[in-house]
Amino acid sequence: MNPQQELEQRGKFRMTVFEEEFFQGKSCEFMFECQNILDRDFRKIRSIKVENGPWVGYEYPEFQGQQFILEKGDYPCYQAWSGNSSYRTEHMLSFRPIKCANHSDSKITLYECEEFMGRKFEMCEDYPSLQAMGWCSKEVPSIKVNSGAWVGYQFPGYRGYQYIFERDRRQGEYRCYNEFGTQAHTNQIQSMRRIQQ
Image (cartoon, rainbow, N blue to C red; front, top):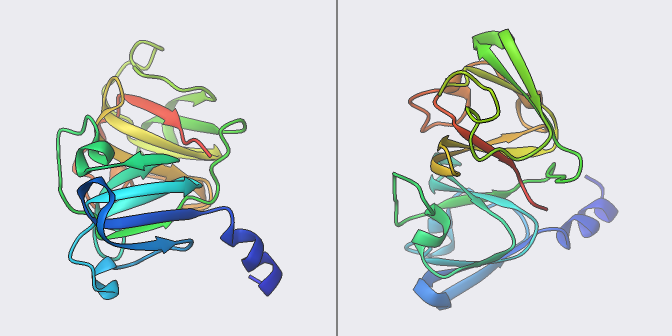
């Protein structure tokens, strides 16, 4: 990235993290990824304000563990970002911006089998229940992101584990559930939505 592009990029992503709930304690503003908040002399992140751009937070350093979508808004405590997750964690130790999110131009293809085999279904809209729109299974073995960025949820109604799918990561190709994220133990995805810019 040349210096001009770097300057333009800075304004697109801005997030402030706080060491305590309700925006208290030590804070730090970020415009780029952070691989390990512990390197910044933080013990933990307990609240967040996202001013610009979507971000993905991770439970552990180096973008490992449970993923959490962070869109523009305030997250006064960990329940605000873990949401309806069946797996709640009080800590987030790394995060990065999602650069390819484009809500108005997002397309994803779901496949019935691993390696993009079997029946497929293209989506351009949000679906709180994949089964209600005609997907016959609770599982999505492989996914190809044609454009934009998406978040898939383990259960209907945007609940459970969150998996972030991006066009500019892995060339948008997720050949099996092991590629959904380091915390993926199953290919169960029952709701999906486009990530807001």
